Amino acid sequence: MEELKKMLEEKFPNIDFDAEKALVSGGVLDSLQVVEIIGEIEDMFDISVTMEYIQPDYFESVETMWDMIEELQ
Image (tube, rainbow, N blue to C red; front, side):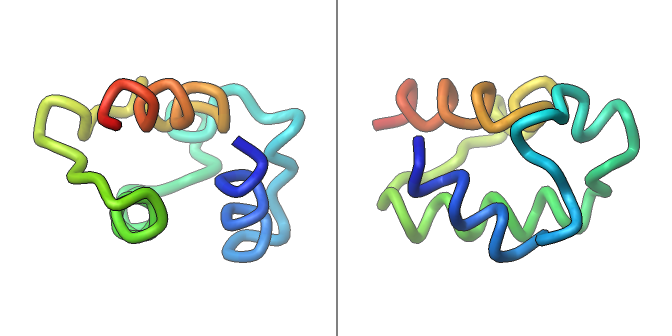
């Protein structure tokens, strides 16, 4: 999970990923940023994020993204 968090902090340095638990629903991340994150996750972890996982709930926090990655590996 640290590798994911590091990538997110490098791409979006103005976001406190430790504190934010509503990244999408709170308007912290927009849809284009989520698409960018999906591409990075697919490359970093050699997985394919399928349509069923492209939902806001999976991108609300580092923890929810990590749970998705673990399900897809």
